[in-house]
Amino acid sequence: MIRDGGENAVEQTLSRLRRIDTSREPAPAPGTPRTLSDLYRDHRMRMVRLAVLLVDDPSTAEDVVQEAFTGLHRHWSGLRDEAAAVGYLRTAVVNGSRSVLRRRRTARDYVPPHQVNARSAESLAMLSAEHQAVVDALSTLPPRQREVLVLRYYGGLSEAEIAESTGISRGTVKSTASRALEAVARVMSGGGAR
Image 1 (tube, rainbow, N blue to C red):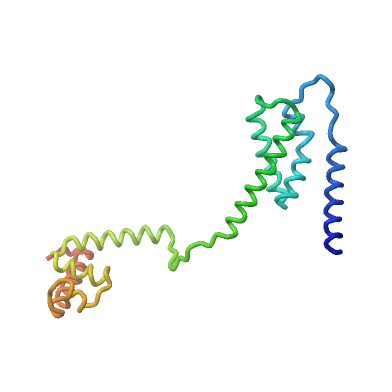
Image 2: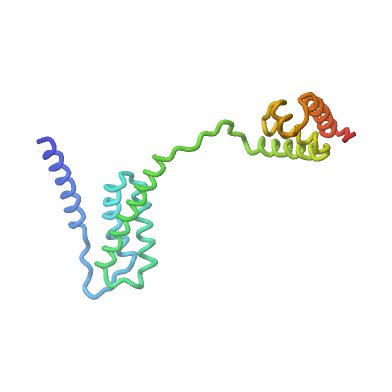
């Protein structure tokens, strides 16, 4: 019973809106061609009410109607008569409202990827400069020292894993890494390579 009452209230509201819209329809003077301005003046509020019922936001509804009239302007030369223009507007408002609702649903369902460390553009630029300085310093190292540092700090391997990967002893990995770090520090401080 509540459901019937709810549907009845909706039907009554829509009927009232329909009566308001039809009572305000202008009676065009016979034989005078209608312009786009006439259609805008006579049908804009009707289309806005339709869009408000669909998108439930007055400012968005006005945007949808404005887009519909813009489309009508683009296709004005190809229309047969005023009835076709009003039909075009109604269809454009319904389709525009559907697009708005689709975008809302997409935006509501979007979950941004998790960013662990969001950095500012300035810090990223500085970081890039630091990275470039490290890469430049690494390029000055002998191949074995460069391999050991890259595997250790970029690859995240332990001394044992580096020894296994490169075919050298753990002690050699440790001493090579130590010498390589000292050389990188010298290059980055401006002391140059040995």
